[in-house]
Length: 81
Image (cartoon, rainbow, N blue to C red; front, side, top):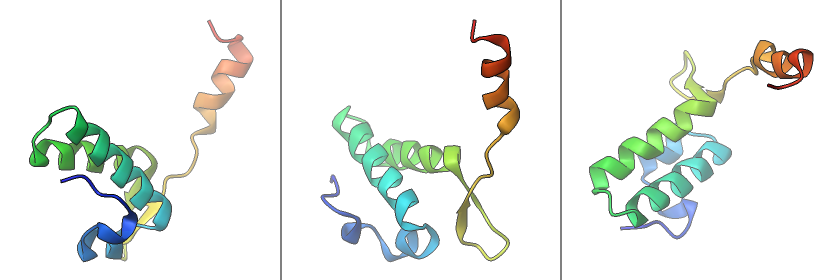
């Protein structure tokens, strides 16, 4: 069942994730489900997508990961390829 808006996410998800992470979850879930993944598979994809940018804090709420400047600087210093 695809979600049409963030309000349709479960209270558990909305309670843990900030709004931007909820948007990531929603988009990833819907994309995975439209690719004919099972609901379980779509949930796994959605959580993995959130984990790319967010991590759980000590209070149980998710927060954005700090940027890894070493990765960004490497491309600038090396010129890319």
